[in-house]
Length: 434
Image 1 (spheres, rainbow, N blue to C red):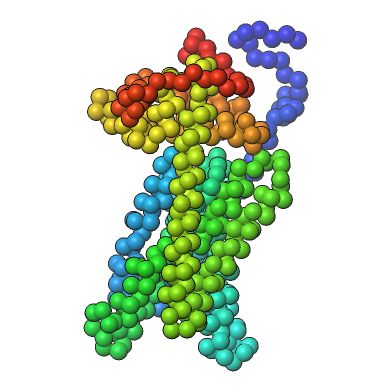
Image 2 (cartoon, helix red, strand yellow):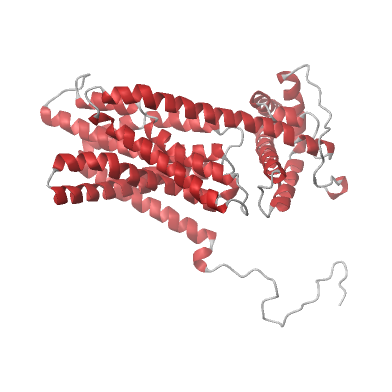
């Protein structure tokens, strides 16, 4: 039977039955709201339990001192990871989840599992010193890195659109480890303060609290993020592999990153057994170079993303979706900032928000197209591309003047290049649709 414009299509199923090909309704435990509520409840319960455990071990006064000192590096580390994520900023909800998981769930798992394993080894071997050493160098790295990696895995599985490459893996892993280190530092600093109280040592450079603060907050606030970032890199590399290709690599790469994180963590924890100056030798010869190398890698990948944005968006200029200055401006962090400032000055907060969203959607579009050209995009490539293009089109009135101004200020002699590359599929621009 034929159908006519404005009329519903004929039904090919009996009344009251589900049509052929219809998507079944998700069961109650598969609904997004149920999963979010369950996860929030888990984190809240974990936070309450870890708070009680840490306070029990340190005392109220020690807990407050530890909390005040442990919070100092957190804004710096979070700001560093957000700076790294400026090209394609991930949503705040992912960062909040990652930090909460590290500070609550991962810390609780670590405290319970490490204590249980150390006591079991001590009971089995009757050697308390050996049990502590084995627990710090073998048990703790495995338990702690696995607990932190769980947050990266959850974002990778359930927030797949927000997890597209190495930078996303580094940011999620680093923020998770920052939350974990925050809780761990409260415990260590609170216990150090309690030791000073018992020995009658006043506040000063010779106190245990000052020594602990120097080692954990001044010298090595990046230690836990550095370990877990290796896991994030493994997931980030796996994210750029096509879903229907290299399935073994998509599993083995995160595992390899996790094993590397465990190995580095164990080496760091074992440095105290390398002699009087073992800790400082490992710090200077291993930790600092590794930190510098991973920082360089992350910054390099970020600049490569900017080059990709500039190159991939040119095809959409030819198709009429974007203005000629857009690819250059969107491929420069300086031009992006100038565009937001221009929009805020002439259009207010609404215009600034529109330009910020335009930059984010355009970056997602460029990286999506890059993956599509290499055969790494998912089955929803065409749908996702259309969504991003329509989101850009809705914000063009605020974004185009701002980006045109920014491109001229950032590079006054710049002229739009002529796109001469191949023209794979680009949705046709239809002005009458809008």
